[in-house]
Amino acid sequence: MKVYFDTNVLVAGMLRNHPHYAPAEAMLRRVVRGEVEGCISTHGLAELYAVLTRLPVTPAVYPTEASQMIQRNVLPRFEMVPLSGREYKEAIAVCASAGWAGGRIYDVLHLAAARRAGCDELCTFNVRHFRELGSDWVNEIRLP
Image (tube, rainbow, N blue to C red; front, top):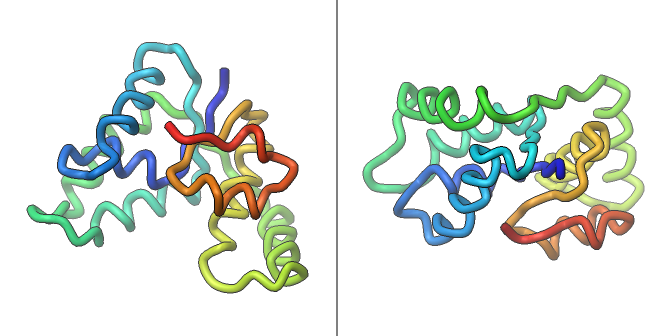
C-alpha cells in the first residue's frame, strides 16, 4: 500500500514531546518495516523543514537538527513526488474557483502529489479539512 504523508504526521512522528507522537511514530515505523510505501511531495519536504525549525517547542529544533532528522527519517525511506508547473497552476485555479484563500493551497498541492504518485491513502491529522478539499478522496484520507 502506498501512503502519502501530510507534513503534520511527519512532524509529530519525529518529536517525542508532540501530543500526536505515538500514532504518528507508529505510522512511520510501518514505513521503516516496509509495510507501507511512504510518499511526500518535494514541496512537503521543504514545508517539513520550515515547520520543524519554527515550531514553538522547547527545546527548539535548530536548522542542523532538522536537516539531520529529515536525512535520517525521510530521505532514505520516502518517495519524493515532484509537481509540475502545470499542477501548481491547476492548484491555484482550483483554490480561486472555490474561494479558498491562504494556506489551503498547500494542502491542495499535497493532494495533487498523492494523486500523481498513485497513493492509496493520505495520512493526516487534519482529516476533515483534507476531505473538504478533496471530495473525490473522502475515503482515502485517514488518521495515522
